[in-house]
Length: 265
Image 1 (cartoon, rainbow, N blue to C red):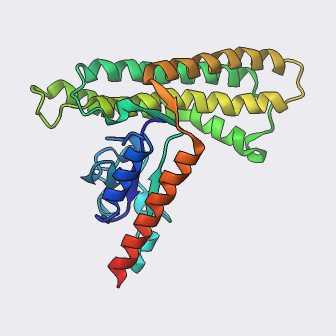
Image 2: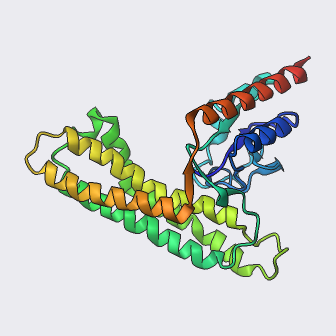
Image 3: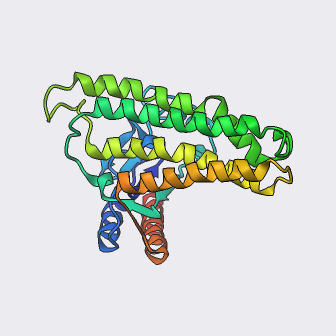
């Protein structure tokens, strides 16, 4: 949900133009600022490169160990990893570079949103703990438990430094002033985490043979449907046809591969 962007483990300048051209031709907005790439280098619009693997000072919350991941392994051999993100649901807010009128207030609302949604899913989970298979036997259950443990708090807490940064900005051209696109990206994250957790738990409840499971399923399904409708309205999303999703991703991958091969010649 949102816009399209590219994550690279090192800059490849050449794919930037065909990437932007493809997105424009297919009516897909670019994602200017994402939760995944907070504080990363931004060499061209919607293209993000992390700092060196041993420098975590500017990485987004949750990305501190990226240097030890398989994502960065090709760097040791002169290679590069490229991830082309393409939305199923597009939001033109993703490329709105206008300064947000009150980012601090928006972040407080989003922190409350993710915490409230997370608590509601966790409350249903508490009443259903004896229904699904135990976490050691079921990956869906493990993820739901992990999210209930501290994910919602981590996401909410990550808003605090950004809220302070926004509050300290004094003019539209102040680099600490956050854009509508950046706030929209964090809005997406705040809304999608409770939706993800509810969707996983709904699958577990649907598969359960316990006689109390159907009632809990109906209760949670009402929340799930309401949250999806709220997100659709708040983010003004529109469906991106699958053929456009695939074409844009294929074009971007080919442009990246061609650029990477040229750099090795």
